[in-house]
Image (cartoon, rainbow, N blue to C red; front, side, top):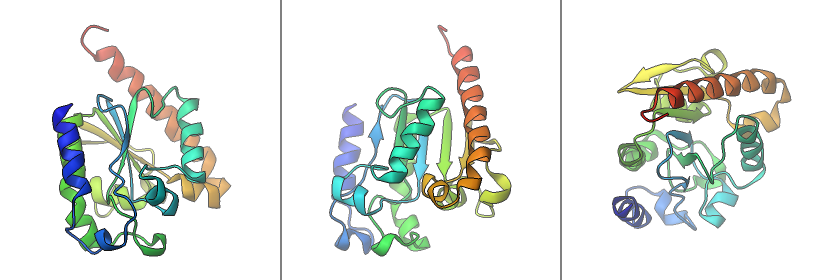
Length: 191
């Protein structure tokens, strides 16, 4: 836990890119630092920047509702972080240089957390973590194996707020995540 706290303290002092000049708060992450499932979004929005916590606005409420459907919650059994830890101006997509400047933080979080499953929320997270050629409309809900971790991407909750037609496919993706999480739990030592 000490390493986790040290990493968070260092991250809060980061000034590797221009986003550090306009942030209100660094949004390091939230959840159980012993979780086996890590959710990764693209970056904080206005509400997240003000509160210093990922997914706290309307999209965060929807994400919490989605997690509840499959027995997950940020309080108990997942951790949520972002590709970039500071809000891009006007909630624009994080630029490649900003993602690159912040990459060490998410990889350090993965190293300490040692998740068995990583769920990318949206296109930016998926192209950063799974494959630069990832297409969210084509590839959401598919499993990828990298370095002993199972990866999947689903639509970002903000996209589901804008387009309700994406919700049935996302529900199927969530049920697949639930199936895989149960399977990994059954394989865990002592279960």
